[in-house]
Image 1 (cartoon, rainbow, N blue to C red):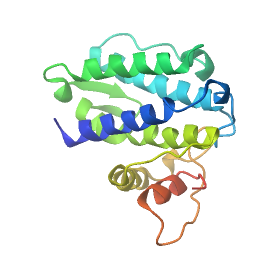
Image 2 (image 1 turned 90 degrees about the horizontal axis):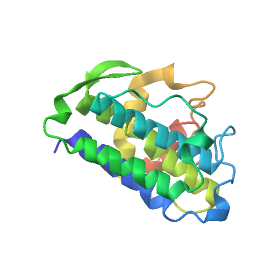
Image 3 (image 1 turned 135 degrees about the vertical axis):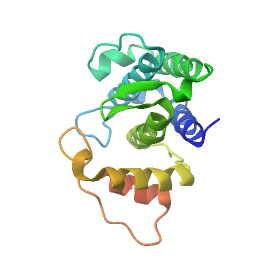
Image 4 (image 1 turned 180 degrees about the vertical axis):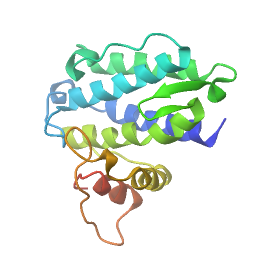
Length: 186
């Protein structure tokens, strides 16, 4: 198993750990992203997971859809099914060397996993924040995620993406520094 695969799977399980603690009544709570509720945020993560599954399997990617319709009526079940499907796709022999097309160009599955784990990690925090529970972001992933985001530069900032970074103290945790860099207040 590659380091990138471990990091991506760990990021998915961070989301899973949050999703399983959300009360049904809280899914409509506003997330830190002013355009999305907790449910819509999870819809975005599910959409990304489904796109990764489709790219790996070489099948037609799901249509772009509103985050709310992606998640359906039972967010936890929809999430679990999408995550299980992706984990099954990632379990195929030789999958990490397979070349796929991503929004950032063609790359191996392993390279994509190493680049894209920060998105579910960020949104695990968003969902937890929206519903008033603690998201425990792994420090190692937060440190690595921050490096990846900084390397991507300003291309990730703007409407529908990250906002300007928020300043945090020099003694802030890696998770807080990561979240602050995305424009969220830890």
